Each structure stands twice: as structure tokens, then as C-alpha cells.
Image (cartoon, rainbow, N blue to C red; front, side, top):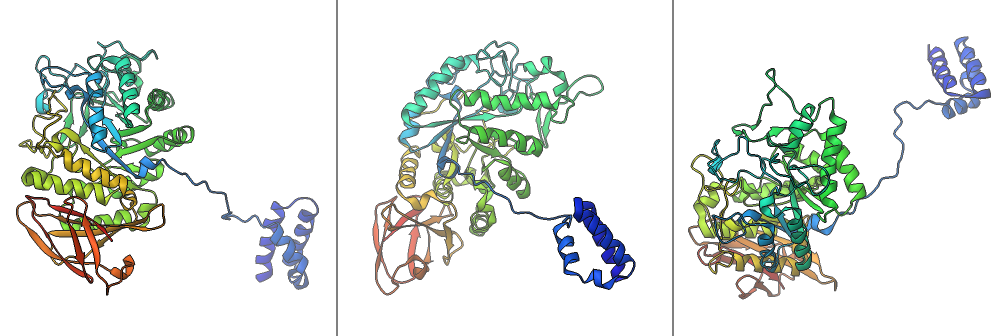
Length: 540
């Protein structure tokens, strides 16, 4: 039986062999089948079998490419605002020129990226009214995410009118956008655009490419839903249509269109509701030809889905930081993101709020919580962002039915006091200055939590080497209670930090300016949320 099995192996090798080897292996296979033990034990038989083994399932070595991303992918502060609300009068729809006038202030606060919600024409049919009312009153501007307007005729010269490659005329059209990008470049800001692959019922795609949508039996298109939310003003695209090649190429060309106009950063709306195969194809091509581009996923989904999107090209991603409010929850979440293999491919972008998110914590905690959550976002992750005007003005009026803002800018024009002396602008500017001055705050995987003896006081340390070789050590302590002073002992592993536990060492609060002399591993910290709910210490 062993010889017969050997004969079968030699016959497989003979099928894979050429010339003389094939003839010799066939003869040896027959010899083994006839019971020739000497042929089976021959070194020549072993050599020929090895050299002609078909090696089914063989895993071969290969060259691998390493992608080096832009620094802003890892270290960047995002500021979001609606350009139509950039004026001083809530009764006037502002333009991108008005918005450009706000850029020097945003840069002065230390932000790196200015992010605009969709700037395209907005559909009229089924337009949403104030606070998501299904019926819009006369003159209401609608949601920018209901992209496309047949009444508008500004396509930037590319032949596509009123869609994803056009700028809303009330924002000033394409020329105003080009002036906006030029002003951002002048002050040192990158412009991020929102890309939402969906349409209003008025989008040119609906009439020109009806096969790009799923139609019901009566010929109508079902509007988009994300239960319990209903988007009566939005049609979803059918990525699996028979016309998929044309649709996919058109959608990829949307990125290409804006890249040609100086945009290299994109926030993509709900990428987890589109096929992974589309993103694998689209982002691979874009990142190969435009390696400076950055793609931020707005993907609130299961972790496995979010991490898969990261591997496909969405290195930056929104996270569940907004809802991680207790000490244990924050520690566990940061440990998963920064201290496991997830940190190899996923760059978590921490946002305490968005136009869709006003948490109960921000609603109830007022100014102290807004400051604490801002410091946490900006120091726990080297990439973070805020939906700016309502956050810096501590506007925490929550919709009575949803965990989002009342009088939401998604549906109406607002006006903000851009130079309010009582706003959070000073603390934002200071924290962003510290981020740019300290390399310890410019990394992600160097975060380490440290013990405190009270559950409402959280402490963590980041370390990185400066250019001169010295160690930059930052210790953050944050009071998670917006109402009461919280105090406790912070336990530091001095041996890990390179500090002699038998010698005194200094810590300086970079927010308040106080300097303390500490000794040993346990030191006392007290934080009054109504004065300043956080310390950002430099150690040494």
C-alpha cells in the first residue's frame, strides 16, 4: 500500500514535469506500482519528486509595499462650519467669500484643517424644513446633504450641472470656492470637503441615469433611511446596478474633480453603507495617483466594519469617543484603539460633537464638560475635530426627540458671534499651541493610562523624543464631574518615565501656568470644574 501511494505521488509530479523528467517519473511510478522497493528508496526518485512537486497551496514569499501617509493623517485638528452661516445676519445666506473671511481666526485658534459640509446645489423637491420638518417653508435653505438641483446651472465647466461637481450659486459658485481655497492656502489651512454619494430627487443623475437607482414597481425611487431616521429628500444610489461600471467611474471622478481644484482632504458620508469592493477599487486608485490625499470615514458601525474600512483606505475615522464618558469606558476604548494591533492601520479621529451629535453629557454639563471633553479629544488622540461654532459658544440646546442640536444648522442659516470674548476660543487656541509645541501630543500609540484613586478623575501620559534627543513627557489630568471639585492621588510609574523616584521633580501646568514640585510615585491633584477642569502638565 505504501508503494501504491508513492506511485500516485510520482504520477502527480510527472504531470507537472517536462521532457526527460516526465518520462523518468512515469517509469518510476509504474515501477512502484509493480512493487519495486529499490526504485522507491532511490535518491534520484526523491530528487525528481521534489523538483517537480506541483506544490498545491504553496505560500510564496513576496515583496510588500509600505505606504507613508501625510502627517495630517496622524496629527491634525479639524474645524467644521457651515459656510452659509458665516455671516452676521441669520436672515442672509452667506457666501464662500464670507466664509473665507473667517479663515484667519480659525487658523489663529490653531486648527490645521477646515471642513465644509456639502457645498453643492440643494434639491427643492421634498426639501427638509427647520429641525428636519418634512415640509420646508418658503425660503428655507434645506439640508446640504440633499445634493443636486435641476434649477441650478453651475457645473464648473465639466458638463455636469447642478450635481456633485457644482457649487451652490448662493455660496458664490465655483469662482468663490476657488477664492476660498486660495485664502486657506494663504493662511496655512487645508480644506476638507464632504463627499456624500446620494442625491436629491432633483439631481441630474436621476433624469440622465435612471439605471443608477433602484425603482419600485410603480416606477418611483424609495428614499433613503437609516432607522429611525428618514431622509425623504435623499435618494440612495444602487452600487450593484447592471450599470455599475459607469456609476463607479463617475463617483470616482467626483474625487478627481475636487482634487484638481486643490482639495486633498475628504470626509466621506456613511461609507459603511456602500460596497467594500467599491472602496477597495476607488481608494486604491486614488491613493496611488494622489498619495497626499486623506479620507476620513463617517462610519458609526460595528468595530469590525470600521476597521475593514481603515484597511481599504479610510485611515482616519470617526469613533465612539463622543459616547465614552466614564473613566473605565474611556480607558478601555483607548486601550483598544492605541495599544492593540488596531493602531497599526486605524487613525481614530476624536470628535466630541458633530451636526448630528449633541450628547446628553454636553447638554447637561455645560461649559465645564465642553472644556473637559475638548481637552480629552485633543490630547487622547493626535487627530481630533469639532463642529466649531456651537461648541466654542457652548450652545447645548438639544432637540427634544433626538440627541442632536435644536435649531440645527443642517436645516437653517444661523449667525454666530465669531469674536465672543466669553467663548472657548482661548482654551482652544492654547491647547492647539501645546499640540504643535510638544511631540508627545503628536503621536497616538504612545498613550498610557495611569491610576488615580477616584473614579471621576482620569490621568494619562504621553512621551516622545524631541529633535534634540531629550524626552517630552506630558501628563493630563481631567475632572469628569462638571459640578464638583474632584481630588485624588495620581500614581506615576517613575521608573518607566526615566525619573529618579528618590529625587524631587517639577511639573508645570501648561494651561494654568502653575508649577509644582512633586516627590515619589503618588502626588495629589485637585480640579475645580468651574475654574478649569483639566491639567496638562509637562513633567521635568
